[in-house]
Amino acid sequence: MKTLFIGSASGYSGKSLVAICLGKILQEKGLKVGFFKPLGTAPCMECDSVVDEDAVNIKKILGLDDGLADICPVVITHDLLMKMFKGELPDQKPAIASAYEKVSKGKDVMIIGGGRTISEGRAIGAPTTDLIREFDWRCLIVDRYFNKVSLDIIFAYKQTLKDRMDGLILNRVEEHNRSHVEKLIVPFLAKNGIPVVGMIPNDATLSAVSVSALCTALGGELLGAQDKGDMLVHNFVVGAMNVDVSRAATASASARTRRSSQAATAWTCRWRPWKHPRASSSSPAASRPTP
Picture 1 (cartoon, rainbow, N blue to C red):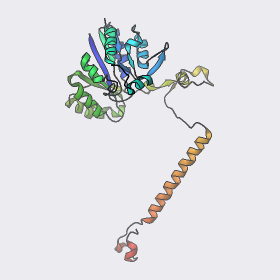
Picture 2: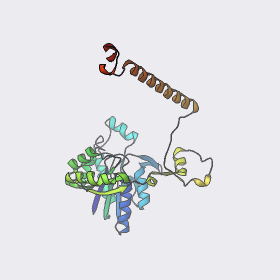
Picture 3: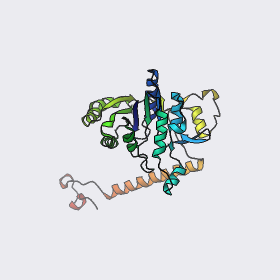
Picture 4: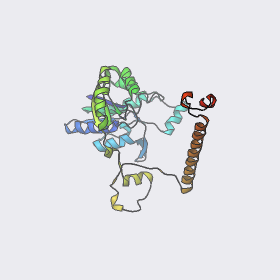
């Protein structure tokens, strides 16, 4: 059985998307694919149980038969954190090991979903890095390229995982940044033993949300154009809660602008430009800057 741990160098890097795409490609090749996420950080309710949202979505998309409690055995909830703070939290590693053994049985490939950082799980006694070593997972890191690369985190992964780190995928690379990434970033990382195995171009549609999904998430109501619920929303503007707050915010901003303008004017008046004595017929005292 082959294993691949997909970690992240930054939040919302696209590791779940990479896991889904790889899973689909491998399934199309006739391989039996499983998914496992040892630590869930996005709790939600499903069938009256607290489960991880990523586990729910990937189970549905890949059509997996495994139970959600086995796909993601530990979900970081408020109750779990309270037990941790009180010293009442039992060792989580046995539950993770048992669930992984059950989910991986009979699979050709196991895709393991990591968290947002390399240090995830350390506080509850189940560090991701320890799990990677204990289960001998191969690792692929995903980073969202937003005019920079999370170099420190990527290097921390490399130093910790060593030869287990197989490569890096740069996601959401804008077209105007592609040449810079290919000519500078990729060679630099390669020299440090970190091969960039893929670059995913930015596609605004992938981060958009439909009008109906937005209404559902906000608990809102679509007042008009009922047939336009499938339209995609690419940008959001969050306004004030009411008109009075909006007016107060506008007035406050205007006041700050006036104060800044007045301060700038006062500073300009205090410091007159210096002139060389030969360029002016005024007295020497007038040619020096006034404190």
